[in-house]
Length: 197
Image 1 (cartoon, rainbow, N blue to C red):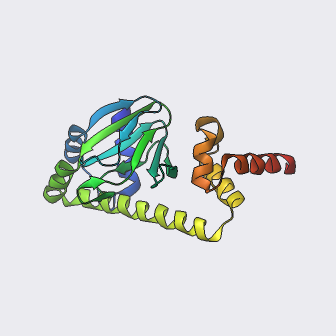
Image 2: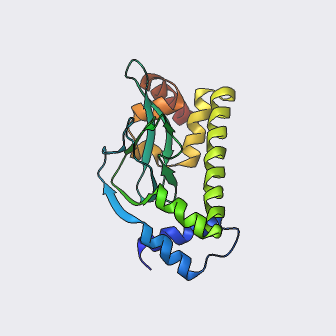
């Protein structure tokens, strides 16, 4: 099995509610195209009109927005095994956010329309899609809850628990943006946490 097939099989096993036979698995694999991105490269830019799903096989991706003053606001970091796409961040036909490769990334890219056509023909695939949507909603709710109920230190600690190597993999300005503070405040938090150990 190739790396792409292994990643797809792990994803399917995580979300399937009904068995996926080898024939359907082969159809899913045939819809995907391997696409690599360099660190710092935009995978999707706000304003794009594409409709694609990406399975992140290797690397780290950052989802971010630009506010009206041009400030870069990090919304989410995604690791290997996660699926992200433009289909659920579209308004008025255009993508509303940016997805950036934080480090070299290997993805499998799927055309949303072809995936939806396959779901109509193969209802078992719909359960996987529902599982992915539920996970997206769960992450969104967790993020909103953290912004309302946690202070910056708690949000940073939680991010470190989700991605222990985040400090070595991501620009600290992006981490600060995710936590909702300035890079200087993040440095203070990191120093305080080191001193407490």
